Image (cartoon, rainbow, N blue to C red):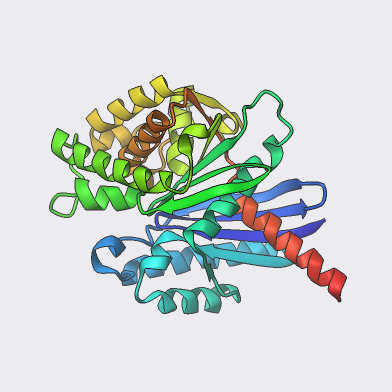
Length: 323
């Protein structure tokens, strides 16, 4: 058993998992799991650079995470940065700042590597389920990109495409620097068109329609699940491995698009930092379900973070054996 810390820094959020991991047994026991909305990717799609205020929000979260890691005595730390960090011209300012706070250099991974981590984290505990059709299609809907990974036990095909809830919102739904209430049909159609084009690209690599079980990851999907379940507050245990039908996703997407910002913020399971971008995330999930004719999505709270933790523990044990 190895105590590790895994950090996933995406376009919209930065998340921490501290866990005891046994890679051989395939078990992972949470000690601390948390998330902060830092919007690191603020404006990156438009400017190609990290904003100073976005970097400072991220470093502040890193300082809080460093304190938690020290408190729990994690032996190894893995820090993975994804979509926005691949795109930003000044990403050295980000990596240098993280190294100064946490003493670890962020690994800016490719979309395909991100997909592998997500698949590992999401499917490790589902591998023995006889009631689930194979192959699995794991989709991780992030702020800047969406990963689609097909496989059974191991990855068969994977593709990362540049559609995410923050990227699409900033590209098509922002007017005069803000997201207006109830976007009109034109902007929504533009979001849909981008999603369709991205899925066309993904389908050149990943046979989406061969999937027999769709597994959805990350904040947009888990928030939709919380709404579908009618939760009074965010409940990770209730959301994990819940099933949401395509009809429910369609209804929730329509509701989010017709709601005001205040109404979206008032939804009990809605993180305040997600209210402006959740509709784009819902559109990605709905369009993907339509594309692969999935009647439902199984929602997983275990995702890229868990995959990173497994990999960190495996690497640590390998080093110990060599030594």
